[in-house]
Image (spheres, rainbow, N blue to C red):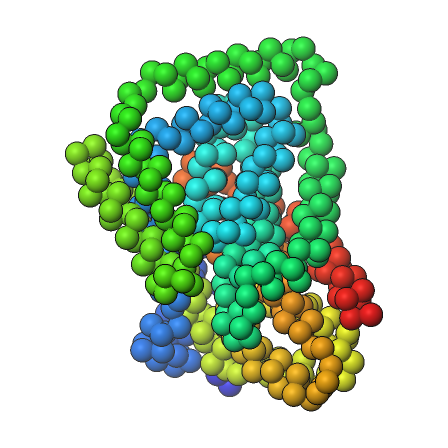
Length: 432
């Protein structure tokens, strides 16, 4: 009976999220409370279900970025980007997409989104353009880039820890499907948004307008008071933070500790120029509460044993390695569209180890890459499919750019199916 109640609560919350009848943080918290009130989870179990590593990382990065922004460094970057691309929409699209993918591979996709989305909105608005298509692209490429490396996305970190795969193992095994997916996504995105992204070089009027807007952005920047010592401190701390994320395994500290250390150190170094109360007020608390509620609801679903049953069904479905890898890919892809992929990947690890034991002498490592691709890329399918998606939508909303669940899914869901089809083709070639 509790299983049906759990499914009912989750489906109700999901429906409310789709149609946006209330703020998503209220919906997630209400669903979480129902899980506790009806006895699916105890209050202690609900607290244990919350992934505090993710929430604390978000909190720390929001504070760090707010302090860094006050130095004017992001405004300076906007001028450089505008000058480099000459205001060309297509060039801006390629620039932000590639930067997002690269940063997501070597940092993590949530941190990248926190850094890139405010920059995008400020620049595109300054140039009189709609930032929404660019934010859509950044969401997609944050998950695509994050899927490439050991440290880019939490599922890969979990898989790496369970298997001992190195950073190079992930890159060497995943660069082909990720490159295919990236090229496919860029092609489809440009094709569907051509009117908004087409080059302006053929239009004298558009070129003149772009030059005027670039000069306007530059003039606005020059009016700001810049402090050299403040900027140098920000650059130094951001650089050390990025290096800390990159060397996180060697350092042996969680990413949220590295991020909090950076935020507090920067706050201390810039205490005379930054009001720490304003930095704390800049935190997207609704986003953090949404994640807390969502983690609790997923914890309730996990407790029913449905994810475990699904994993056993995968294991017993066929004895063909190729078909097994396809099932792992598509099941993890669809699960990641609606549930947090971390508990599913955690449950699938002993299942895949068990499958490998049934195939002595066979190379079954393809199952791990199928799990990674499905869990990471499947998150692109909906607005709640990955942490980066939620953060991007909330940061955009704060700046007055509304991204609805349905408007995102209408574009992203078929595109994600295309990504999974490309990965299926890769698995076929690889197993063959």
